[in-house]
Length: 165
Image 1 (cartoon, one colour):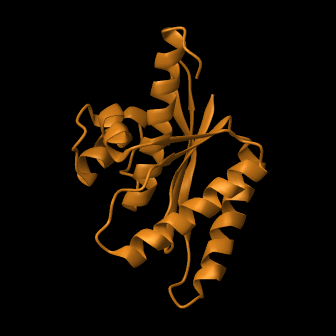
Image 2 (image 1 turned 180 degrees about the vertical axis):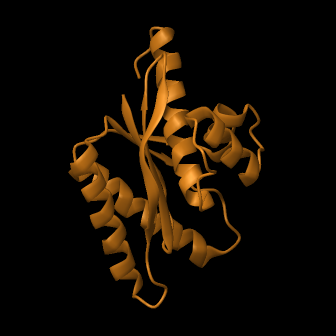
């Protein structure tokens, strides 16, 4: 199963494509989609949408997985995060790819065993699980890989219990 994990943001959206089975998980592609703060928000959102569509067209993942947004005290930041997540979701829908969403605590727990893990712990565990020589940078990339791993682990657990994915 191939899962494209996405950590949305309006300045940088992390992505990580992971292939996983009962026996093995391995990274296939990862990086970030950078946008310029000088560009209008609509142009940044279009760049994210186009890049996610291209990743889907190239890699044909079985699933796209995203994190549900956390509550933010800054309304404008939360709104922009929701917009970037929305265009990533739309790209997946247009690509015909099913979508899974997980809370930050679910992702952290799946990858580190601790639902309140910090960024450094997530990065280190992603590096170890995927056998990477270097820690995935920036943190958005590690988060996207962690989201993909979370979906693989949850999907395999549900399969093992005889539940629908």
